[in-house]
Image (cartoon, rainbow, N blue to C red):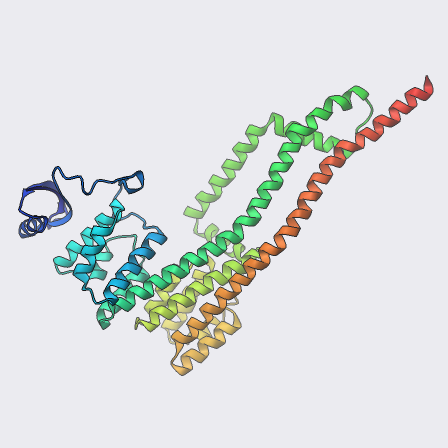
Length: 416
């Protein structure tokens, strides 16, 4: 039977072609003898690997730089952990994963990892070739390989991934609700100014007389939105693009923006608690896995979502590397809660740092939950009042001239 393949030679050059073999394993073995590492192989004329839906189609791109979605990564890690805990060896586990995987890109990644295992690489070494696997997971897996508990390493990675998904969902929901209400207020203003106020303009002009200042201001806003809506869109797009560009290219702006996020009322505490919870959770897992404290702190630092908190963790790491205790280094920076500093001190003195960090991660996650609930509960009445004030102001602006018109009509009647 003939198989088509994509492989890499010793010079890391891609080779494509076809080869005759009785089975796919025989084809892989022949290519390996030629010094080729197989990346993808399939039987010619066979459609077993063809995508069955648009969601299974490979949309192109280099699989080594492709990002793996958090939920997909969680599923992969959980399956690997369960199968290895059940006593299935790594080689058979990978074969099962490859056969059951429907996503084409993920299937290619698993195939290449499996081929690397056959050529003598460890699993952690093979995974380092793919940007979709975060360095912190690779370090935990590497530690699991060293101590012979790879199944526990996968479970730890899956737990971290699950916690990350939950935390990200909480902070996203906390930010999306007030954003939705703000957009709603803006939409109400635009609808009233563009579609409602102009219908009153002709009526006001026909009666003559001076309009109240509030009505004049609202009419001016209405005229601007109707006549220069395109300018408003250009300015909005320009501001958004400019801010996104600065966030990607300007380190000073990135740090300023990260610090400002922590100062936003109601939202800032959630962002800080989320960052500290993630830091403590990762530090706890890494130290319990036997990873040296300096490396554990560096990996945890890179996984913290807020740049300002990242910078403070780096400052702590710099102090720790010259012999300062973690709690003493953290005490210099207000972003770290006093209770966190105290718990780390207890953990360092008792030799149970991982346990202390685990408890603090639970505490910060609970605080983030409470802050999210508080934000949601407070935003509903606040935004209701804001919407009421905005709509009320526009309604008053439309009604006030009517009283003036009534006076003009009354004066005209009495004169006649």
